[in-house]
Image 1 (cartoon, rainbow, N blue to C red):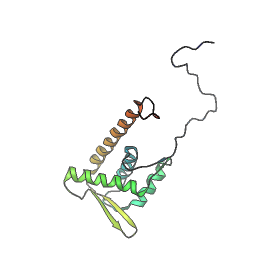
Image 2: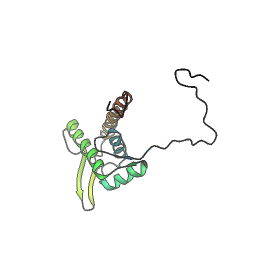
Image 3: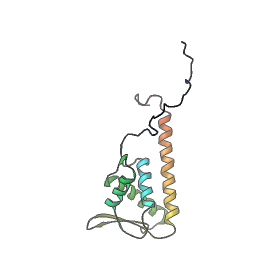
Image 4: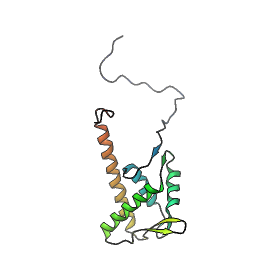
Length: 147
């Protein structure tokens, strides 16, 4: 029996092999574009012009992404970054309002037609950042040797 260089041929998986390969659990971190994208997705689905408890938003994100764990701090960090981006783009603070309520911090998204296209652009920015991280990871020769 000899070995030829290159990738060996592929055969189909045996019958009954699990269809999905579960990923490891991930603890969301501030500054991670993959986590930020999931928070932005949840914010994009929020009802406009209505205060939402950030803890409820955290619960919604955790329920939607069972393989992730989001804390209030991570979600607030993304919302603060979104608020800063809004202020830079529109020169006002009405688009994303963070406030303290009796039962914890609150977030409100402005109920205007400019929110949807703007939040789509924020999500696209995070997708580009995710791709950059994946590209950098793919270029590593040996991830355990530091590069």
